[in-house]
Length: 306
Image (tube, rainbow, N blue to C red; front, side, top):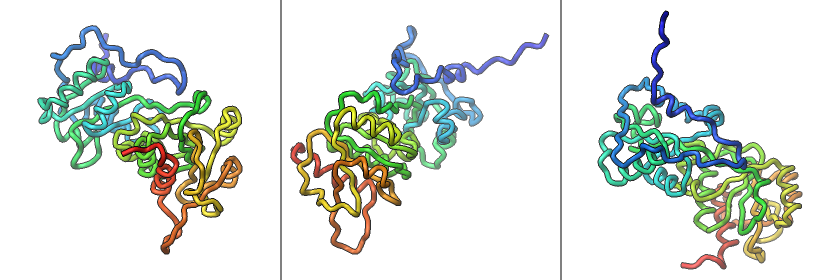
C-alpha cells in the first residue's frame, strides 16, 4: 500500500480556521501555546517554493485576502504597531540578516507567544513575498478587522464616511489623518477599495491599527443615522456654506464622495448640511485625502492643542 506524502508542518500551522464574520463574538485568535517561549527559534526558509511563501505572496490579491481573511503588513514599525494593539497575527517573517536586532527579536517573541508561525528567510524569499526588489526586512500576516455599522451603537466624536473611494493611497492617507486629529473612525459606504490592500496599509503608516473601520450600504447607513440621530455633513462643489463658518458639533459624520464624481445625489440627500472649501487659484478640485484633511482639522480645531 502506497503511503501519502508527508504534509509540510509549516503549511498546517498557516492553514488555520478563518476568522469569524465581522461583529461576531470571538475568542482570542492567538492564544499563547503552552510551549511558546523566548528561546524558541524561527523556522528557516530559503526555498521560493515553500507553501507558506506562496500563501503570503498570494495576499497581494484581493480575492485571496477576501477568502483567507488575512492581509500583509510590511515593515517593523507597522508590525510592531499591530502587535502592540493586539491584532491577531498568523505569520511573521524576517530576514536572516536582521534576526539579532533587538526590536526584531522582540517582535518575533511577541508573535510566537500568540501562536504565530515565525519564519527566518533569505533576501530572495522576501523579494518573492513582497513583490519588489527592495523589500522591508519584516513582514507579517494579520487578520482583518472590518466591522458592521450596525455594531456601532454609541457613536461619539467625529467620523468620516467615504462613498465609493477607489484609490488605496487616498483611503490609507485618510485613515492616517483621522488618527492624527483624534477622530473616532472611518465608515466605508458602498463599493470601496480594499482597506487591507498593501498600498492602503502602507499609506496608513500604522494608523490602520488604531482607527476602527466600519462598512455599510447606503440603506444601512441611512437606518443607522435615523436610529442614532447623528448629524451628517457632506462636502460638494455646489455647497453654499463655507466649511469654516459651521459650528461643528462634537459628534458628527463628515461624508466625502469619491475621487471622480464627488458625493452622489443619493448620499447628498442624507446630509443635514453641505459645505464647500473655497479655492482661489486655477485648480478646479482638491485631492480627496487633502480635502478630507482640510475639513477634519477645522472640525477638530478647538479640540487640538500643541
